[in-house]
Length: 487
Image (cartoon, rainbow, N blue to C red):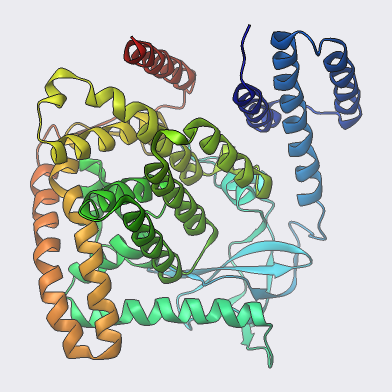
């Protein structure tokens, strides 16, 4: 039986990722894991000549390593000096730019070797690197009860946040700036300040809600307050991904950029795409989710450059493996991570299957590419979107085809307008007038389709058993399409 080396690589990676996933649902004893590992190594030596048995043992090795790694990571992450449920004096440095909300500010600080989230008053404003001191009670995220399908405590743990101060004593809050900062803090401050100046430039050159929408397109909706009516329109039309920084929207945007750069050589298009991704990462503040999305976007571009010479499955599994090494909690708690993984898989495996449909194959090339890649990503992400957000958009395919070709152009014009405004305000306003035309078109399309009575239906459920069944069916269809392609 002929089994190539790639099958062993895929087997180990799938086994490891399966172990990371299953570790959250079963008790793990590291001593037993060590014994299983020794037994598997002995069996591998005994059955080395039997290639099929060796492949099975490699898969089991990956599974045991994944289970063990999650347990070790969880033990290390849980080791901290926090006291829960008791009012005390707390002091720590803000670790990243605070999230500004309409009525409050959320800041993550470092305290006794752990990260804790603090809800602060809306004013005064706080900055990355500030040292906060206050009195409050730390809540253990594990004790936070889920609401609907959303477990906020699990989400915090997934971000390696081990405590939450929901209501600090506001009259005890003091803030001071350290006299000296490390080089890494200075570098991060420079990135964050650049991002802030860029946003200010756009707010001065575009009216509302176009300014908020443009900032949302370029930097993600975590950095701006998009009007609720417009956010609702995005939800009903299945286009929220264009204002959410994740691999889901980056994958789609990179696909659109590839079409825009089609006039250039494949290699030049690849480098132009990487430059765009690098600028995007800097302007969004280089947070972990943005860097992850940028990496996935770069891999999509690389996959296009290499064509069939690269094994996309190994690439996808290997990148996921690297990401989970840094934070294995993501596979359970981070919808952005899940959507990043699935969007990439949908683009690579589901999109070609859609392109083979007779009706789709008759469309013009550009429209066919936009439709198939958009639908490929959405089909792959469908269960996660429904389970987390509880809405199914029936007009999503039409709306995505109408607006996605213009999203990269809008981002490019908005980016140029923002940079121009940073240099000279009148230049920025002139460029923003051009960007406004496309923004107006997108908002009109979104608003029109969102107002259709049957545009979306609610489908909120706490049951998850149908999700693996859904993906099994998708895998079988992909395999069937692959076999037909061979014939």
